[in-house]
Image 1 (spheres, rainbow, N blue to C red):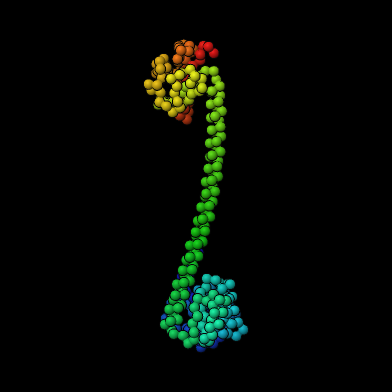
Image 2: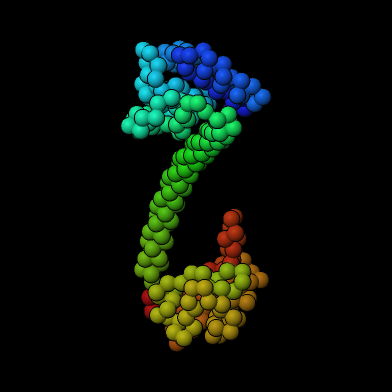
Length: 273
């Protein structure tokens, strides 16, 4: 939507002398001046030219000013409507304003300077209306775009949440499987942080338990500490030893899998099992 650059004024009056007088008033103004001698002709010009301002006589044959301006409002509600009348009838003025939603009522005879100011203000009012309408339309469009974006984001969030819930469920099931195994398991990443353990390891290791996310430096009692250090220099390593008073086999393997899965896995298999 763009604001009109050319300002058109349509004057409607059944008296040619009035139209000529109005034309002389605006002769030096930067307006396109249109005239009609009846309401019916005025409607045709309104549809063809789309004027921003309409100045209409109040009393005209066939179609009076009230009926004419009512139709103008229905066809082009943004057009600013001004009434001219030589009748100082308060009731008629109120009816004209109510029926046609008139911007101003100008009595005949008019003051040239006053009618110029009225029309100038009417033009400004028209452009403000159009600009507000443009901004409202833009705001509605942006709101619709924002709503659509929010819906897409919510959909992505729901999908992500569903994916995370699914991953959590898998992790829980994996941990349940690990906790069911009769051997103790400990996983350590390249930064010496515990990333995997199970219930049997906790039962065997005692005060050497490594909580997930805990750095194992100075935490592992012998022979675990030495075993871990030796395993860092080998791919696979195993010994028979005693861990926290329980005899068994301590085995380890380095992990070097794609997507950053690196570290070591330690398994302790108690002889009693």
